[in-house]
Image 1: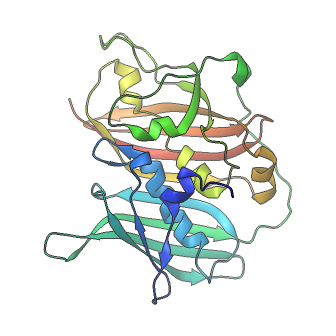
Image 2: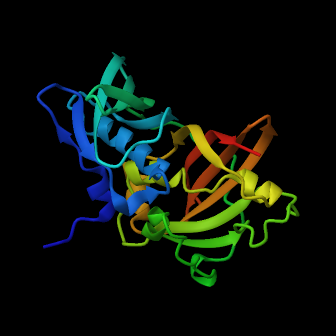
Image 3: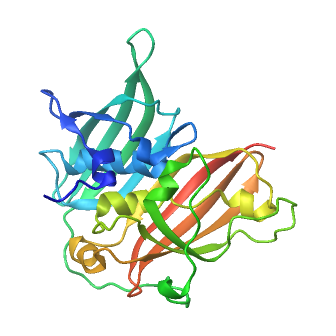
Length: 276
């Protein structure tokens, strides 16, 4: 019998008697200091849509807004298809948890767009940067205490390491890194959504200062279908992330994820809070 992958345990959702309502439980394997790794939360939201009986097509866009930290324990997910057209479908979602009085409180909101894609012309104007093969790059050491989710991934940084000295000396915000699940797992839309949020805050690299920071909202665009994901299998993805504008407590960072074969699978943009 094959053991259940830790990521699939974290994504496990139980449908309730009400269509579109699911329950789940946070995973200690994907914990990140004060709450779950944000990529896991994004994957859970997407999984609710992918598990919905009214689903049309495959994911095109996913936006997740982190309104408050998710507490350890049970949570509820509510997914609603607000509009279904001939080839596209628009979803709204919420994750809620009960407060001390048992009143549901929203901690995450999201939107998802799915579509029934058709074969058309296509091209890639964002080619994969030339880098060393993943096996030629040293694997990153296990993450610090309290950041369990880092141990769930195999990461091989090509450039843009986390600063070793927090002295304000850095001049750029670009990271290039090979990554995949540490415990082999075939790539799918949920894991691709999670990996789109793998990058540490760009302000740390840009300033070489370890300031408090956290994602407020992230949007991921999917540029691949099931066949392209199946071709990746358990292989590596090359991730690139860079900051764009740092201003009055918030900055945005963009990221791309390519397969080893150079296929651009997903891009993301997020707005991040930071504090002096």
